[in-house]
Image 1 (tube, rainbow, N blue to C red):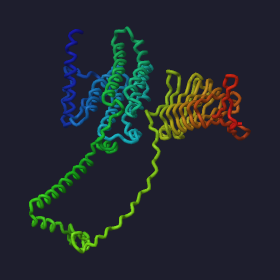
Image 2 (image 1 turned 90 degrees about the horizontal axis):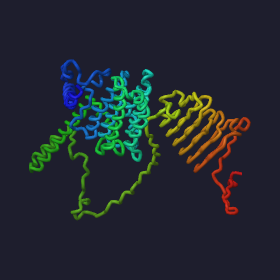
Image 3 (image 1 turned 90 degrees about the vertical axis):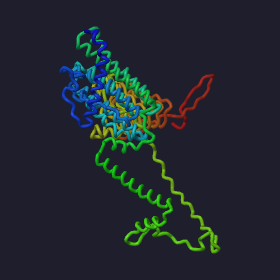
Image 4 (image 1 turned 45 degrees about the horizontal axis):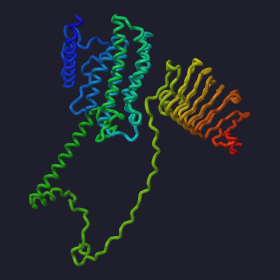
Amino acid sequence: MTKSKVPVDPLREFLEAVVTRIEALETHCGISAPASSSSVGGASLHGASSHGMQKTASARHIAGAGETPATKAFDKFYNTTVYKFADSCDDLEMGDMGKYIVETFSGMRYVVVLASKSKQPQDMTELTQYLTPITDPVGKIRTMRLKRDFDSHQKAIMEMLACVSWVTLRAPNLPAPFVKECIGSSDFWSNRIRKEFKGKDDEKAMAQLAFCDALKKTLQDLAAYIDEYHKTGLEFNPKGVSLAEAAIRLTDNPLQDAAIEANRKKDQLANKKNKDIGNTVKGGNMAGLVSELANRRSQDGSSAATGLRKVTKDQQTWRKEFKGEKPKPQPVVVPPSSPKKPVKKKKVGLPILEYQERGTKWVVENHDKETVKAVSSTGLLEVEVSDPKQQVYIYNCEEVTIKVTGAKLKSLIVDSCSKVNVIFPTIISGCEIVNSKKIAVQSDGVCPVFTIDKTVGVTVYLSAESVAVSSFTTSMSSEMNVSIPDGEDQKEIPIPEQFVHKLTNGSLSSEVSDLYH
């Protein structure tokens, strides 16, 4: 029986594709397909599924004649690779996981189509408001409560779904290599599943291995698609409309379509009248032209010539009465140039606040004051550390305050942040600040080492018990200060930036500049 299936499989896949396209066209035209159109002998061509969205032919995207090659290629990827991965989730009975996977990539398709019909915005943060079709199902997957048997599956999927951020990347951050990096992080959890079911031939083991293969294939095909059609970032249409207008057109609003059609007919009628007048003059029919002008006279006597200034003889250059006086040139008024607004730093990626077992660390990424308001009513991001072995990594955040609670933590890293405040308890290893601007950190316990590298504007607030313990290592940094308790007040001490170097007996010695004494 196994050998007989080999030549049949390609034919069956071809028939499935044909039936799917026909059903989609019937649904689009308002024709209800018969119940047996997608089944043979009572068995569905697509197999059984717990989420009806995937098995409904009309839910699949059929690219129209006006779609771009990038959209058509994404539809092929969506209708094959993504659906197979969703089916593998259903085969394992993972609840609505397959449905949310389909919704996520359907939202990604919406962004691809939106970009194909619009110009690239000057500020890529304008695209963020149109990412809801992607972020909503991803959030549902993150909050799903599955059986403990599916812990590795859910974590592998979450590592995979980090790839959806490719739509926000622009050169030099290329999207295809970013998606390829997600393959390694998701394989970390997939390999645990492969190891558990390796060497087993039962149906359950085959379904588990098929899930791992389908997940990896989804990322590989997405990376190949991006590498071909969006190599330097999401491809926009230079001749398109604005993002807002393109989004409105994609909603297929019938009232708006009717208004557009009415304006189009109005313009056609105006063009026809202008064409008739042109033909009248071109044919030499002056009587017809005079008649046309008379018809355009209004009830109050106004006509096409009403309001025109009369030219006197002394203003006509060909007459001898012409005085030849030239009008004085009007002074040119130069409008004051408006000050250029500072361009905000582009945020890359979706905001993240989560604990990762791999590395035993809390990750806080891509947050600003707007994203904080969405997740916290107090405007404060809180990270609760339950184990002294845990670390906290803060990356690419701006204008936020983060409070770390708990008894102790291993280490704290602030990387590529701006205007960020961090409050933390006792740190066992140390606190590191790198590639940042205007950072304030406050130790409520003890922190033995502060490392500051390539940072401008740092203020370190020490507790009374940390004053005698803490040390500071700085490199390529400026505007650094340490604030320590001084009775009921705080005393601020600058960290030296200027040094005096001397050669003595063939060796170099360094001393702090007199400015700090």
